[in-house]
Length: 85
Image 1 (tube, helix red, strand yellow):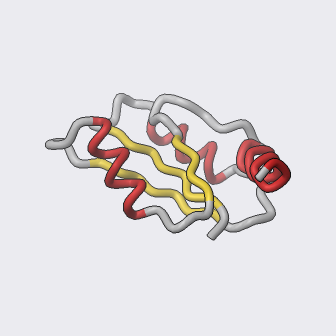
Image 2 (tube, rainbow, N blue to C red; image 1 turned 60 degrees about the horizontal axis):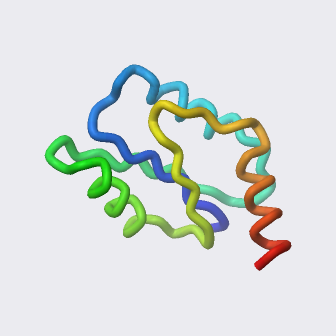
Image 3 (cartoon, one colour; image 1 turned 180 degrees about the vertical axis):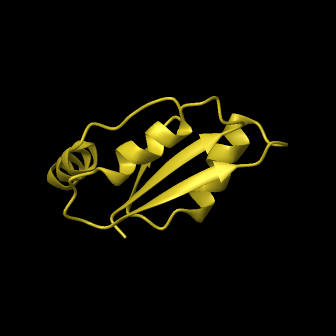
């Protein structure tokens, strides 16, 4: 697995679907996984930490639930990380 994308959230504020769609629209030649980390009894930080524990990727990208990825975000980040070590 190349990249784990973690969306930690406490409650859906109405933007989660758009964030997921931006992940699904990625132009990425590698492998990736999406981890929705949600437990209403946890803080946002605890949900983030839970996502990190579940992640299988070489790299982790955090995607806030109210944010969007550009179409080549994962490819650009992966290429830069591989190039710079």
